[in-house]
Image 1 (cartoon, rainbow, N blue to C red):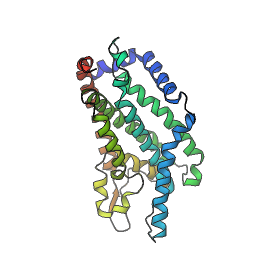
Image 2 (cartoon, one colour; image 1 turned 90 degrees about the vertical axis):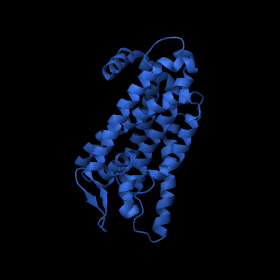
Image 3 (tube, rainbow, N blue to C red; image 1 turned 135 degrees about the horizontal axis):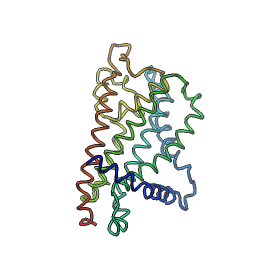
Image 4 (cartoon, one colour; image 1 turned 60 degrees about the vertical axis):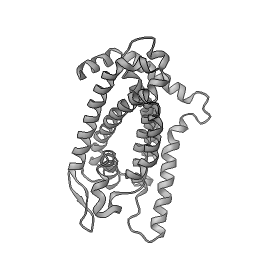
Length: 273
C-alpha cells in the first residue's frame, strides 16, 4: 500500500505544487506583515524563553537555558505547531475540491506541511544570520541537523495524516489539537533543558519531539556528537544515542501508520462533508 500511495503522490506532483503555491498565497493575501508572520511565533517563543532565562539567572541558578538553544528549539516547535494546525483542517477547508474530483487526498495535508516548511526556512535563514550572537558555531556536528530535520518532518507528517482524517470524522479534533499544542510546549524541552530535571530528564525524552529538539541544541550550540552519551555534573544521563534511535523509530512508524490509516479512511471522506 505504501508503494501505491507514493506512486499516486508522484503522479500528482503538479497538483501538489499548485496546492502548495495556493496555500502560500492564501496565507499572505491581504496580510499587513507578509512573510514577517513566519518569524512571529519563533520570536514570541524566544522572548518567553529569554524571560525564563533571565529569571533563572537573577535567582542565582546556574542551569539557565542558553538563548541559542531556546532559539533553535523554538524554530522547530513553530514548524511543528504550524504544520499540524494547517494540515489538520486541510480536508475540511478543501471540501469543494475533494467532493468534485478524484486525486490522492494525501496531497492536501502534505501541501500544508510544505507551505509551513517554506515559512520555516525563512525563519531558519534569519536565525542562522544572527546565530553567532546566539551561540551558534560551525562544526562537523552540523551534519546532524539535516538528519534531525528529516525526523521532524517524518513525525509531523505522520501525525498530520492522523489528525487530518480524524478532524473530518470528529470536528472537535482541531480544538483538542489546540489544547495539546498550548500545553504541549511545557512537556517538550523548548523553553528549558533536560538537565534542569535532573534524574527525571529521561522521562522528558519519552516525548518523541524531545530528542529531535534537544539534538538540534546539542549540535548547533554545544557542538556535541549525538553518538555519545552525555551526563550532567551530578551524574544524570541527559542524552543517549538511544534517544535518537527512539525518535527515528517513532517518526518512521508514525509516517507509515498515518499514511495507511489515511488511505484506508479516504473512501469515507465524502460521507462526512
